[in-house]
Length: 113
Image 1: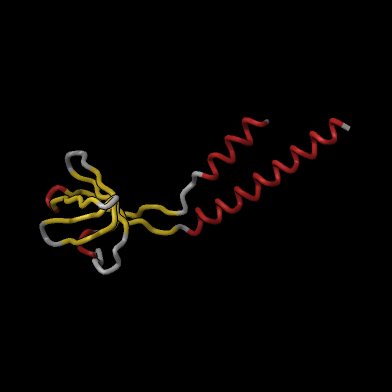
Image 2: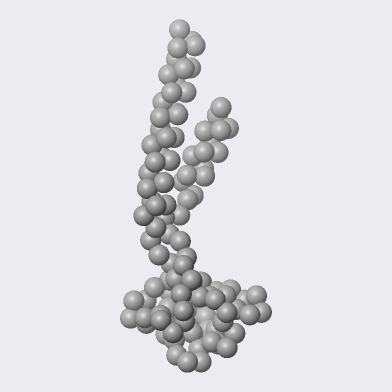
């Protein structure tokens, strides 16, 4: 039971409230400075916040370092979006975990009595 509770709480705590959605390179707004995940043809993948883009090059910043990817090598671009459903699921999962922990403590107390 303890392992189950630990596994459940671990999976809930490390859930993300964000997801990545595929976008068209030409529809990316530079002003928003959004976070992107860029997939390259040769298996090169980079993540980071958009610094600039033009017809030939996309530049992302990740941990203070600039990473460049030529547009000719990009085959997929994903933008990070906030997910209401994942956030609601996280809250529901936390609530369910609290209920399970309280029930387990209650059962242990009754068993000792």
